[in-house]
Image (cartoon, rainbow, N blue to C red; front, side):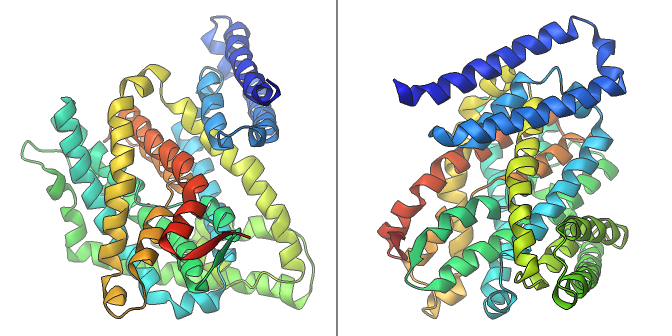
Length: 443
């Protein structure tokens, strides 16, 4: 009976939270317009994050699932944030930049450089295969479920692009406890997950801009919606983003090197300032903010004082950024719609994990498989450790602010994919590692 206490505690807490929100609002919709009330809601959201992070580890359900449930319970309270789309987009984009910077910090640059080509193939070719493949698969599914309507096509394509990203923050803790027979498999898994987030975010943002600027016509198909990516203007824009992102990211790295490596001053504030600054400057120079933040973290050698500061960074991400993003995600879609789309969302998630992801890995890495760099077991393992998480959630939130898509549909299906990948894959990763022969299980 004692093992059920944490579950009961969180369920009662979230129920009381939802009930209390209704009493607090009291049918007065104007109360949410006050700045003092909005500050109170922000404080409540932070307190809820604390409660979830404190109790959720005692349950078998991941903390992010409880955070999404908390967001659903706080939908009324969080309406000032979820309705204020511009401020919400800015907040989640800054959080995403910090997450990508942290992903870069986790990757030794020498390993990234050594395995750059397979990493790049997974992150570039893989994102394209994932986005197009899942879009066609989802279109077939929605047709089978009778949901198909012409206006839904952009939403399907955006889901394919946003969900192509992976979650380094979910992968890294799982891989740290495994003893790999060949260490480079772990290095590639971590590095490609961070770089894939960059590719997925660039693709999603590019398509959103294209959908807003180009009206939907009667003859539009899933394939034609990807056609803006196949012209010279798209390649020029991508080249500009890569060049400006690397340049701004290197400038951010130089700032970190100056203040940490040369002076030895371990103020963690700089680890927050640099990704924010590089993101904003990168976006103003070709829209490469996410890439700039990642590059500055990738080039940074986390050692000495910087390593001490990075512990603060990990806590900041785990206990503030990730819970906040998932709470907002939970607040964005009505519970009734989430349940209504559950059959479609669950089937989509399973096909995404066990068909699309393996297809991406095998297509992307076939040159190295043919030359015996990778074995079948390696590819199967890499197919399984491609969880969809925090960056995909951020991209879905950003996409929900665009008028060209049906936000409820995008958030609901995307949430089911995120939920199932993060519930199923992390706990089974040690078993898959032993089954494929890439690792010897937990240390």
